[in-house]
Length: 92
Image (tube, rainbow, N blue to C red; front, side, top):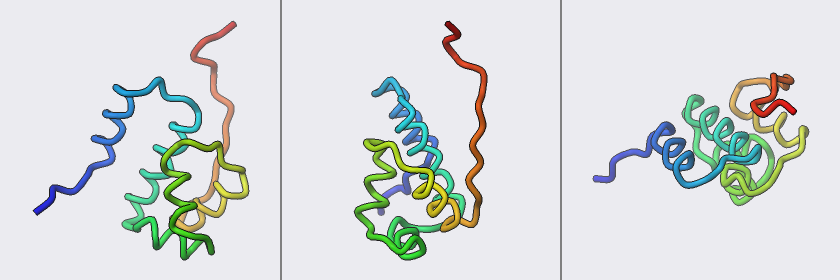
């Protein structure tokens, strides 16, 4: 029997393999929200009125999603989108 994949395992592997850009940070947030909601990618897609492949692309971190898509994803997981401006990690 396959051991379930844990979010922290995915995040740790990505942190090792990639210099995480904004796309990956967003993807990690999306995956965490979906896991916390106990939903599959297919269930998120149905709730968003889109396809499984769209959700998979969002969670792959290869695209920078629009605010509209992020809002739909948040709603599908029972959350709301909150955007904030934080202090820069690399101040100029």
